Image (cartoon, rainbow, N blue to C red; front, side, top):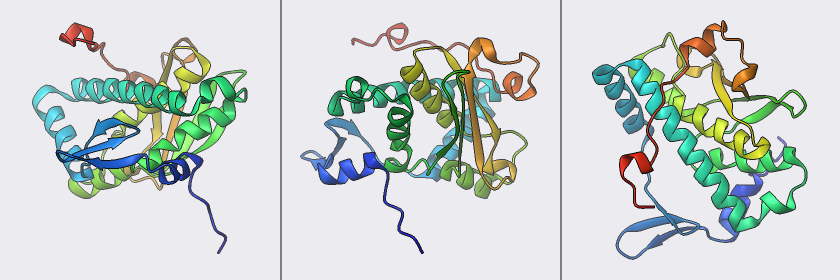
Length: 214
């Protein structure tokens, strides 16, 4: 069996001991505080919000949260390693950043298509969240990786500097063998595309609108 080295970003996390436990019971990644959570907890939270407030609201919240997380993580990594300035090859930049999904347990995704001329991006992998969601609640009729869609959209937006939208065309929670994420600029989507229509989101307030001090 051939040896598959871990993603470059994970190698750097291990080499530089970027994941640390600090005094006061704190956990940080490159100095940014965080927590470890279980997939079952996130699946329960997503199901709970969908049941209480509606599926569209749930989808919108998780997608928006994913965009926030993805944008913050992308900029954090770029700041620590300077890739935004040193990588002229956008393909390598995007591949490096996508390796974050392995670091945080979101799954090992690979790019099936990276078309920087037409700005069409297709990622494929198995989402641990979707796997857990299916175990808990059975096979679903619609995809469940709304957070991951948002993260993916943010990575691509930061790379190509255009507003995009990510749709999950296949999902493990729907009984598929893998998840497939398709991302394109918002104005490039066919508004009659069923997946685009069903997975569209409502506008959510940003940090400042919620009263954040920074």
